Image (cartoon, rainbow, N blue to C red; front, top):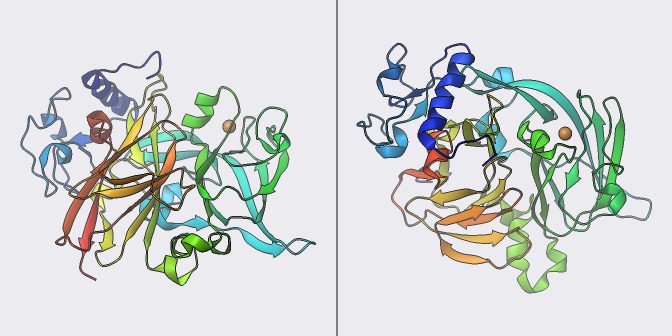
Length: 376
Ligand SMILES: [Cu+2]
């Protein structure tokens, strides 16, 4: 919690409503059914009402479903949509180095861009390639990576990768932190395999983080290096037949301080509050699910992921091929913590299964979604 932030959820909701007025009077919260228009009387639920105090009319029901943004964010305006972000991996361009190694090259540009992060609420983001979170970079263990970073934004920025590299490539002041108009090339080996992240490391760090400068950085294990756990390694390798059996998605837990008071007004995975509640993520129940989960939430010290009616295995940081935790239904992450979740619905009946942060306030302010589990 930032020094200026309140930890009082009621007051925060009050701030949210104030922010809505500032955003042009577009009302956001309602106890309405999903997708239903309640313009004109959405304020009938008092802003300080405790969750569940009013009967839910949503088909998703219950205390989680009765507070929801109304309307939809325009994916055309943002240039990306939430469903697309789940499965869109940036794998760069592959070539060979002079000594015969695989070289994977990425092009990243820092761009100032206004995003519509909730219906009618616009946020002056600083982005990588015009999106928040930035591109989900994906490579394979042992490759040489070359990231050409161009700063077309209005402030100094960098790319600081969580991984193994030299001091010169660390993306901190004096080592890859560049001014507007400049370019820098980061180059290092892809290691260790795992679920990592990158983010800007300009100061003040909290400002550059919360403005949107972060993204997932996944390094798949090279199966040839893991003969004793070959099947698991193969299943993690994007492009393999074994990997194609999985339903993989990337979820970056983030939040937005839309009134710049050092506390967040909106919480989400992949930026858009309630996006996956309004448009549940379709899951084929016969195939396993793998989530690359990264927490970049600024101001709040912790975030979490809770899966309803099911349990998952968890690989902390993704750097092992055996689970760190087995059979859990909740995982907590500080900022920059991340890991891989694996679970299956094969023995479940089809239906809508919820997932959300288990900080109730985060849930109500946008960090809640649904899996729409269906027969194959
Ligand atoms: Cu920055």
